[in-house]
Image (cartoon, rainbow over the protein chains, first blue to last red):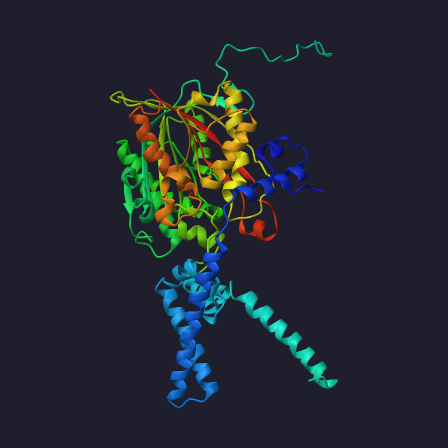
Amino acid sequence: MMSNKAVSAADVAMEKDQKLREYKYNQYVKDKTPTASIGVNVLNAFWVGGSICTLGQFLTNMFMKYGASEQLAASYTILSLIFLSALFTGLNVYGKITNFAGAGTVVPITGFANSVAACAIEYKKEGQVFGIGCQIFTIAGPVILYGTVSSWILGVIYYILKTIGVV
Amino acid sequence: MASDGRTEFKYEQTPIFNKMTGKQSILFENPPFIIAESSVAGKKEGEGPLGAYFDEIVEDGYFGGTSWEEAESKFLNRAAKLVIKKANLKNSDIRYLIGGDLLGQLISTSFGVTDLEIPLLGVFGACSTMGEAMIIGSTLVDGDYADKTIAITSSHFASAEKQFRFPLGYGNQRAPSASWTVTGSGAVIIAKDSPPNRKVKIRIKGATIGKIVDYGIKDNSNMGASMAPAATNTISQNLKDLNVQPGYYDKIITGDLGHVGSDILIDLLKQEGYDISSNHMDCGIEIFDKDTQDTHAGGSGCACSAITFTSYVLKKMKEKEWKRVLFSPTGSLQSKVSFNEGQSMPGIAHAVIVEAE
């Protein structure tokens, strides 16, 4: 087994076995490469992501105040957030916010909208079919695919549990 | 004597100058001249520390075009026309053009040079392309196969992001070790003779052609680390082939290792017995201000070494502040496919010996 002590450039240079050298070099590079400050990133993600959620709650309350049912208000809220995200993507602002806030803007539905809008804008030049049509879900595709698959699996589990009377 | 009685052919020691030096290096018999250079840079590069050195700064990322790829071609086209103009030549005076870029099938180069009507050799060495183009261009000139050649390359932040990473508008956080692709294009004219009125003449004395070196780095946001072993290999080979120490060069200039890769290069070269910490410079570090421009590890892309060399480095040489440099552009050889298929990212580096006299 490898020891946990830091790998030096000398260790890398002296290693003749290619696989071991690759391993040692990767360890050495890891020590040399600066890492992002997790504390600051988490804090920024928290307050920006929280602000987006607060905006969502504000919109829901507002729609309900004007007579929408809770379910309808939730749908309007999602639509509004998606619209705002696409708008800010088009204005080249959303990416800059994400650069600062990270997961705070990637995780909410606005992040999903951004990934779709960004592809639509980028690939528009390649045409409506092979550009936008084929590539719009380049980033969002996995989310849609695996979201659908996992909801199907959960549905099966729910059905089984219901059949045997657990839920 | 061969069995059939005829005399066997024997390689004799010929009196001609041996241009092959050491294992991987060339020393030219009549070192070609760099008679003109051009650098066309994007807006962000223009705002960086080298902004004042560039010939032209193009504020519009599309360069008046409609796509990033078209824009990159326009950068390249502009750099080619500018270098010809600066040398007071016509397109037809240029025998061959050697160029390349990062985009698939070199579309930036091929579309960028169409209207010039200069015979083209398209080359790819990822971000080391400028070195490769200069080596081929000067070899053709020294071998009397051409009197004037252009070595040219380009890259564009947005077209590179689109091809290798994500669409521009997509929000994601960049790793601290990630680099920023330089937008721009740089070109040099390599010629057999120099115009007589030049006070300082810049010559390409020789070169070392690098090999692919793979130390198994798979993180595509740490290209400096993937290229540093290749740069180490090429630079140390150059020093061995020429039997010199790093102090032989006023500057040893790498292409786009950035902050992470440069540290590793200096570290690894020490293991080979060479200390370049006092005369090493990396174009990727010089071209952007890491603190104010949010470029993390530094600049990258073919244009990173090309426009730094054709602006800042050649200016320093013309002022004779640096009389001899080793210009070693570095490339990380990968594609989106190889990356997704879990392949490592081998590196390559070439080195060109440039002298002012």
